[in-house]
Length: 188
Image (cartoon, rainbow, N blue to C red; front, side, top):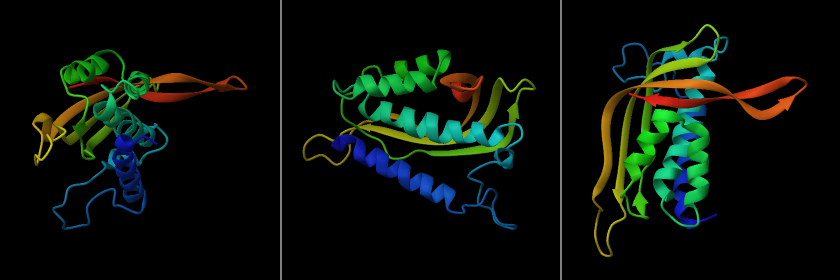
């Protein structure tokens, strides 16, 4: 595995382990700590859990973070772009690709904080979903030799977003049934 991807993979693995190891869906009674995941994500019947997992893990941590990290590198950039293109469509993809124009090849990006808040809305035909997030991102240029930190390329602190996702079929089909995935089509 390429050295520059190891911190990203390690960060994602730690985040997923922490999220799946019994972290609370909602804060303890009387606690003022905010929820990591909305109660709206706790439902399986309308695919809300799927939508939440898709956005946080598949779309953000496994597509957007690696694209930010290595998207301008000659060896790894094409694979990172392909992964991003498979998870972000239309306006959302243009937003991220345009955002990274002019970024240097080497960047530092800690694992972002993404909290899903409020209800998760899934359309009656299960074709679209809308979630609301509070996100903190920090992307810096890799520090110059002997420097402490590089310049900030992108930063958000507790920024609220409305995310629209579409449910699209994948190429994995058997016995007349195809698996689906949730892709981001709009970031507001």
